[in-house]
Length: 221
Image (cartoon, helix red, strand yellow):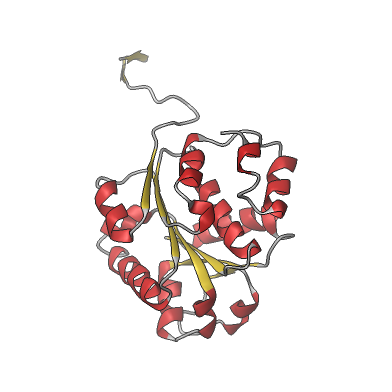
């Protein structure tokens, strides 16, 4: 799909940013996500290899939600270090379009200042604390991006993540969930639980080859 084919679906400000960056073609998982309705507020579960463009799907969903006035977007990551990385990346790209914040500090607070921000990056544990403290601004969340959503199966982080998605869907019935992962063993089952469209693709920017290394040589097969 050419970027121009999605011009009427993307907010004009976001389209201008992508065009300025020289993006002319959307990657396969991005095209499939758009066809599944991600720009119209539909929930999607994106399963595709590393480097295939999953994060951009989340960015397009978040910015569309914000710029069209549907509501805030919250981006959940498993680690503080990853939160800092995403905050830096998104600020560089989109700080002129919306107000971006990262919260990963004191768990026992409402962080009321976040009411003035549009795009919020945090860990699952932090969002869990915010919901338990009934932070009023969380009512304004319209899009929830869950990076590394396969961690639902993790014995330590999984239960918190599951409760978060369950609670937010109960509080905000029209919540859009965008799940991202390169490694899910049961994507159909997870998509059904999320009530989301499954976006599955195997395209990767660099072909993956298998081989055997022995005595300084690699034999591919």
